[in-house]
Figure 1: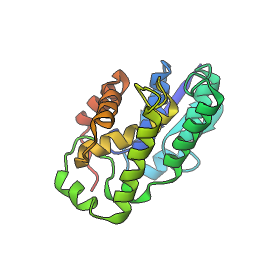
Figure 2: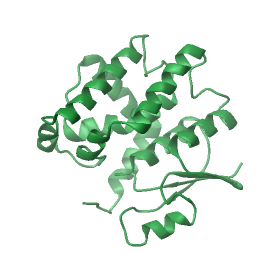
Figure 3: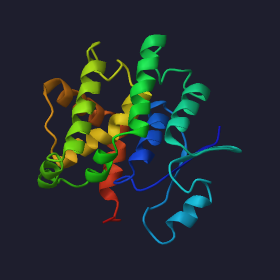
Figure 4: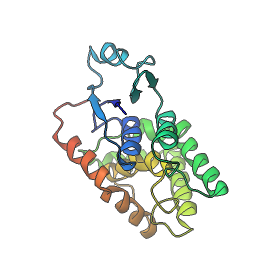
Length: 213
């Protein structure tokens, strides 16, 4: 096994976090290639690895996978013995559905509450939550978390799954922008942040010197 994962800045790149977290939670060793984003040379450097020109990108010997959900699915099938999705078929379908919803949706939240782990912007967050589209995204995420945790937790589908990897950047966004969460959802957020792999990512993000306006 010779895995390489190309990622962007840990402070800013939510998609990189999703792929990286799946590999880390699966207990895999991999080479991390970090390319700072939004620099004149960023696109050219990423294109050396990723034909889409985007991160994350997983390289496994001669195979290149350049989509976060596809990376997670590949790792689950090839290296994690299927344990990154729930075992029960119905529960697994539900987990895939909510991960896919995050993969393709929530554009207003992404636009007005971009990931920036090092920062705290409660005033900017309060202003963003006055927008109907952002408020609707937040309400939907709370609904998803509430429904998934109803089975008892501690994470969305019990043990860690790809669904948690996909909502992990949202957990950091809610912290950055001061989004209030009811008790069970705040507890879920705390559990995600407390994952040792998340702690490593956050610690690295805090040491990065780059800034993106």
